[in-house]
Each structure stands twice: as C-alpha cells, then as structure tokens.
Image 1 (tube, one colour):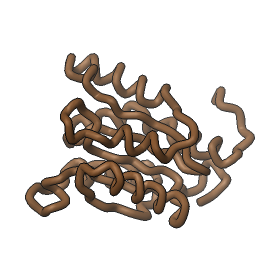
Image 2 (image 1 turned 120 degrees about the vertical axis):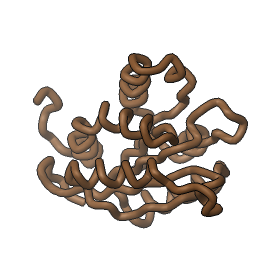
Image 3 (image 1 turned 60 degrees about the vertical axis):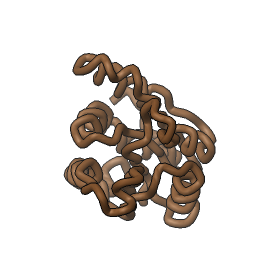
Image 4 (image 1 turned 180 degrees about the vertical axis):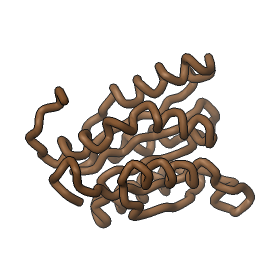
Length: 169
C-alpha cells in the first residue's frame, strides 16, 4: 500500500467458478488477469478460486479488504444472468459506495465486440480504502474488460486512499 500515484499497490484476484473451485476447470481468466495486473505494476497479494456462493464471495471480499488491506480486488466470473451468477449481489453486500463509471465503460467497450455484453451485471465499488471490480468469467472477456479500465485504476486507488492530485491529468 502507498499514498503515491507512482508507488506499488496490491491486488487480489478472486475467481468465482463452481467447476474451478472443484478442480474440474483450469482458471485461465485468473491467470490472464494476474499477468495484466502485475504487468501494470500491481503487486499480487491474494489469489483464490471459490464456488458461486454469495456468502463465500462476500466473506472473502470482506477478509481481503478488512484484514489483508488489499488495494484493488478483481473478481472474475458470476456476472451473467444464470441462476448461479451471484457475484454482483455478493459485491453489493460488502461495498459502501458504487463506482458505476467503471462497469459502464466496460459494458460499452464490450458492446462494440458482442451484443451479449448487455447481459453482464458486473459492478464496481469501494469498501474502506479498496476498489472492487467484477469482470466476466471468460478469459477473453475478462482481458478485454480489464484493458478498458486498467489505465485509470492506479489513480482510482490513489484517490480512494485520500490522494490529493487532480483527476484531470
């Protein structure tokens, strides 16, 4: 953790997948996100695969923020319209403020690629001094969505932590 825009912030990747949590599917989206985030200068502090269970997701998010103090948490999976997709609800239960522009930008960029982007229900929000962002579960969609917002995330975390530099840069 740091209060400098140029310093290193921590990140955590939480993959939500019933099959992945049982070892029946390789987590390619989580691996892709690790590469993107560390390539952008974030330090990986946590990585976990959990089932599509709202309580498990919420508990993990709370622990990562409240105990581990992770600056940026990216979830992948569980953002669609299937009955088991509960990641947005689990996230909404732990955040104190939404940051709708992040999810709006990702859906807008995705809509240029596929009409199915309108089915994404992912949200982004703040808990304490941490930013939590929901991404789709597929490797391709997770990569594309993170690419859309990645350049703004360091500044977002900086501002969440009380940074005083203007956003106009």
